[in-house]
Image 1 (cartoon, rainbow, N blue to C red):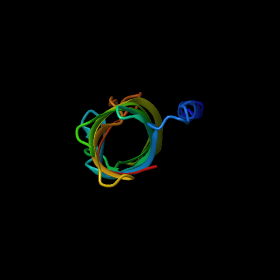
Image 2: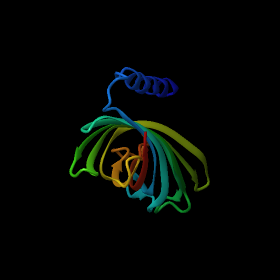
Image 3: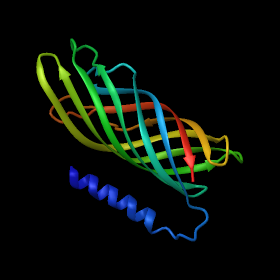
Length: 184
């Protein structure tokens, strides 16, 4: 799994580094997202909405396409129908961001890529169990620039798309977040 993280990070760095430094369209940014997240393990086992967040860095290559890297986590939350079992999630997402300006200061965007999530389940008389899985991610959002360098927004993202509580131990992770970005 460490190899996967290293390859993903190296790929993103190379993608950013190979963009022509003369290109005035490339606009890097950093940001934060905070919101509510749910983790669904399938078979009726899921958490209620829980606070979570992420830090992100990315670049808009032109007004219509960008790329983003996110690192985040979801606060520990009780899993329904389990008698005190709780789960906690940490994740890293690598996303392509097609975007469409709808006004001079506003745009809508999509997100598609992958997320590697480590889900830790504790309680219920069993020892703590952790699994790390990579799954497809997708979502959509709205962004509004309140100043040249600052934007705010809202988004829905499905960080992982398949739930399986059996041997595969996959969790479907969804989030609705408010975001704030600083554009360089």
